[in-house]
Image 1 (cartoon, rainbow, N blue to C red):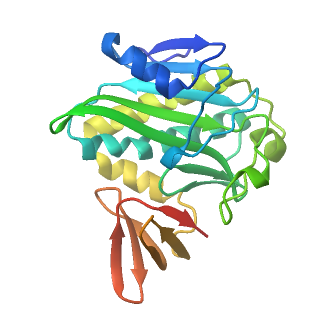
Image 2 (spheres, rainbow, N blue to C red):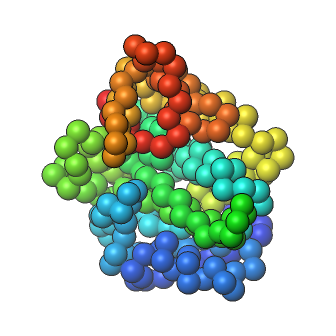
Length: 249
């Protein structure tokens, strides 16, 4: 990994319960940002506690960092990570066709879910002590369609959709480099350029989508993402800003 970004550490594990769990264990002694890569996870998880299937050859990685600022700022790094994932996919395949970003935390390829992002943090008061950005990418194999909830985007793999065979190590090298670039941009210029870049790659922008939470469902036209990262829908009752939800097409 000759192009590994300066200042970022790397831990590679053959097997672990979860890279997010490993990040929590490393957090008390971590002196700087560090990527954790595991070739096998025995207890991987996705958003809202859902199981995450991680077949051999896919990417399972977490970036552990200690970001400055408040929890709201830390949460915007899901957009930073999404842009880095998009660029890494372009770098390893040589193509951007078919790639898009699904709010809040997914990368799509040819309309199917290729990758997911999960943020977990530990904090004290208004500050974040550590942020763990968990990333899973279906490089070689996609989970079966019946392993996802009804109505969810079908899983796809990079290999099946593009014919590109990429190892987790090679993909992580591109991902880490891209992430370091966007992190620097975010710290220097704030969220606005990240938001603009994300919107230029957004899936279903300008189309009718459904945003669901445990308590409600909102249908409307995907208008934008606001300065706080919330989804903005134009509904029959006017513009609605949604800070957290699952999106369905």
